[in-house]
Image 1 (tube, rainbow, N blue to C red):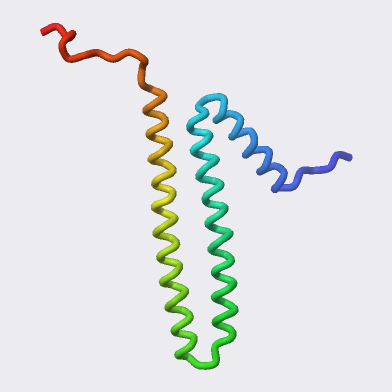
Image 2 (image 1 turned 180 degrees about the vertical axis):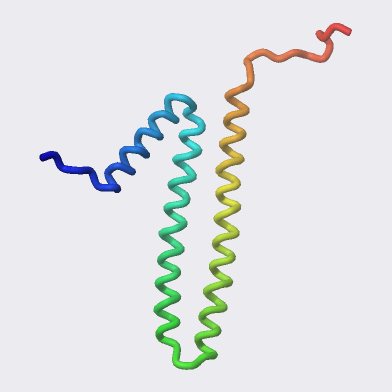
Length: 117
């Protein structure tokens, strides 16, 4: 009897196949996808650490005022980090767009004086 694949193995092989297909079709798009996935994973990991830290601080609070202060700081920091992350993702996409335009340009250029009127 053969061993069935777990959903994780199936998903991983699907991601590998998608990455391979993207690399063969458009390396710039594959790099963009990879950069965005890497950045997303980094950000999620960082935010989870912040969530656990805030939870510990909330559990240590002795008064409702302390809890309100911890919650306010948590939300302010989260909003700041999410804003910075959105800007970072925008930069990644903009850089990829610039690289795509560079790759699409031809090696020849025309001057304004050589166009017939």
